[in-house]
Length: 247
Image (cartoon, rainbow, N blue to C red; front, side):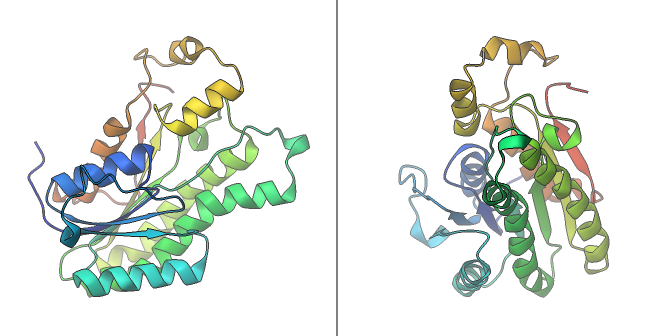
């Protein structure tokens, strides 16, 4: 069982799905949590102690917003121990119909946000005597292909894997670890919307998963929090597949 830790973490995309599950678990473990999302709604039944969290609404591909919210959070808590890059979006548009604007939107939501949040948090991670961590979010689509999403989504998720490995190499001399998870189908609002829009039989998705079921957001969050803990102290530059056995 993970021991309780008391550190300060940024969680992007914390309004729903994997981001919400991760932020909730970190908070319940006694950590300070910095919530950042484009449409952030705080669950006051969970986040009761205002001294233990701070929330920000904005575009995570806006460098001014990202730089400012990280600085504000640091000034409140006096330290930042890690970053969970979870924010992102998807689209099922096929390549012939993808406009340049839509391409940029998906790349910004998934890849540029990861780049900017990492770029601006690193100086604060370097200030700590303890080892800092960055955990990125790719996808089974970035490893192989997507049964639902388009090439702009799979491209952004594949790029996050390369980003993770290079950043891990660059930051290793500062004892800052950078890892990545590649979830499979997860029961999130994003998946449910895609299934409904495309009239997909959810049972057909499950048939492609050896474990025969869709993951819960909490199952993905558990692995991400493991990657932030001292229990994974020798892991960096790794990509952890959480996909129920999909090869």
